[in-house]
Length: 408
Image 1 (cartoon, rainbow, N blue to C red):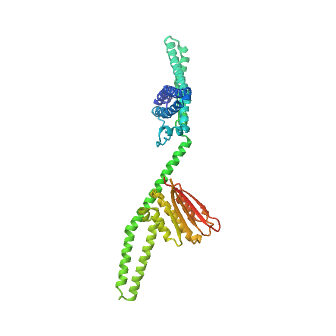
Image 2: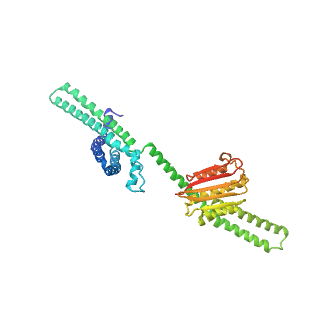
Image 3: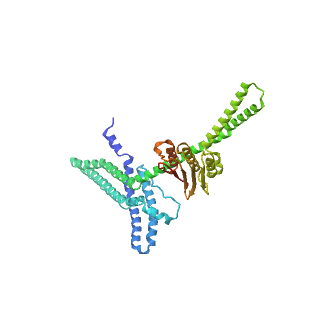
């Protein structure tokens, strides 16, 4: 059974002392932070006419503010066991001056400065003064009660003793409230904002999606390689043996010869279908020779004339190449199935960090992504690598499909 003394002893456990140290340590840290930042601001204002001094002060400010934030985060972690997530780090792909203004415009820097200059010192001062006042009052009341008891005061000592006991119980609650208020302010100003968290989440999802797309492409390559080097070679050998048997055994009874002939034709048909499947998974020519050769193969196999233009001086990432190939392949398949076109044109070019694909046909038009899965599949393939797809297909034609794929 829990006694009142157990509650009081639990109330005065180690977290109370840690909160006391946390509040006390926050005062000198806040004063140093406020002095450093205020000094930089004052120097910038006084020497603003030099232009160079404010720029240097701003550069120093962007460097010392994260350091002061790290000190405060360490204080919370050490005494309150509270982890405040760090802010996103700026990209280190430029000189300090080039990174200066983007950092100065970021809300995270000024939120940190607000905590170091205003909120942190205010909470630290309130917490320190409250702690000092309550501790002092508790100590004074206890000393007075002891003196009255030693002087034989009796009932006279009861009042200061009760006051000391009340303060002894109240101090932990007071420290807990101040520490909680400090934690809320630190999370809001020293930690990432909702926008930062969303940006980080989006970046994580983008990286995860890229890994999934790359893994799927690698798996297609593996299946294509296994089918090409294993199953396809066995079918080639089977078709060759049946062809030799069909040629050699001419004196067999007609039913037996018909069985060999049919088996030979079935083997050749299965080999053709397997080659189509392998080509649909991932064409080997795309790996070996790139988009130009792969697109030439698509144009040659189309059931209508295709004018092809490929201008990609430097190869892009394998995943982007695969997406571009399959987008053009599916677009030409849709043209053959639905457009009733007599010819088509395919243009592929790299424009900086963007790979642009244009597929145009002279068919009957009226293509709408909502009316079939083919065009939705094109949009999904382009979207899997943050690409965009636009379709212009008025009734009566022509139809133009434009795709842009990032290839940085």
